[in-house]
Length: 287
Image (cartoon, rainbow, N blue to C red; front, side, top):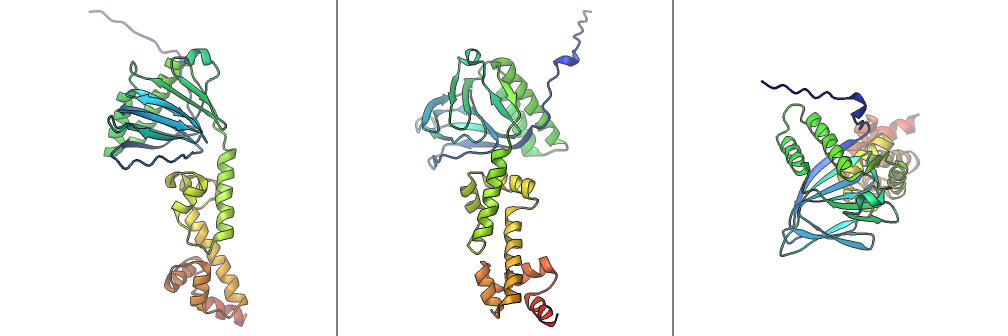
């Protein structure tokens, strides 16, 4: 019996501390494609499962087809366009704390490399790698959500990163949170100035160029509470001021603050202050 032992050297182990898998999604062109430029304060990896089309990024366009991997660094505006005869189908990973560097351009000439005003984009073909197999396992884990599936997905993400770095001599740099903080501050300032308007997560996502899921995640991380919770607290704060300084009715105050109904205002006010608007006003007058 033959026996071959391969030892693992510690200095060959990669460290991916700080990377966080935000989401895994699948998309397929079915005639309702909306080609809208957008950006995220995190990286996205697009793997084309089948079909063909093109990617548009800040005025530049390049073709994509089966087995292509497209790396979109943070804050780069981009969108996809599918061929109707060969509809695009792809898997997307959203990854926080990740940004790729393409300093050794000679090593990545096999793909398409672009430098935009805000960051880099790179496309290459992964036909000879196992990335698609790992992505399928990740999708299966997320769909079934068995015990510790999050750990499995995190480990698979690290395996995918290693495959990418190994095959293309790319490098990973620490993602810069400065723009993320700026976007969250912009959302906060908008809420402060427009709290009486009909504001939804869609409104804020359009303002910040983030998807709704990541907007809630980023805003909560930066401000401490979700954007809708912040909006309600802002309205309650202004409501207390109106109850103290005016003789407006509860209905008038509710409408002024942007609440959809007086009952909703009263419920929200009591949840935050522990008192109804009338109780708060009466106690303020008595004091």
